[in-house]
Image (cartoon, rainbow, N blue to C red):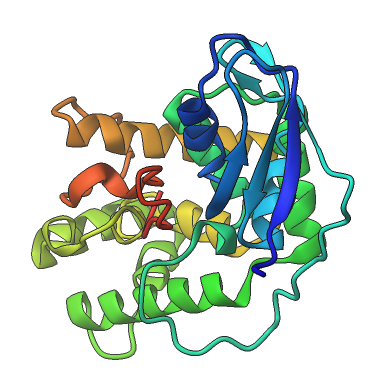
Length: 261
């Protein structure tokens, strides 16, 4: 029998459907099943990983369909050791491997309402558990691969845009114009890290030192990236939009973890 990690969601709005719950909680990680009948105020969401369930618990007090939901669990889901050795990343990063603050930013960018108390919980979880080894491996591989390809051997994109804070913007723009990073990068992370604000993006995803304001700022960058992909003009400093389908958001139809936010 496959082990799942359940959370109980209560105070659900009468208009909330099973698909709404699925869309909402897919940001936390892969879902095995949802026990819910529309009209009931309570549902149980079963996740494949303990880390996904722990992410869901941080959403206690979040808003879904206008209702402030309660997310609890009778089971104590184990912490996962972020220093656990992982092999070289060779595929899409899973939602459950991402920093919790990054997941919270995805929620805000998608238009969900999370209070600053919820955002602070995400920060506290990152401070407690660190950034997962798998995510850091993915990020560093991306940074090194793109840096070597677009700038030069043994170069990183994050290093290029953060060498000197005062000249970071002009450096990043110059590199982008010369190398066509915006056109060659294929996902949100690679485009964001090569933007004039790449040093901020790098720090946000690889460091546990952040504030609620930083989550709001990253949510704005993600939202502007989506807007640009749909034909709107990006805000100043927003990373270029991804040319890939769906912008890499969680796909509830497959529950496959996205490559990017």
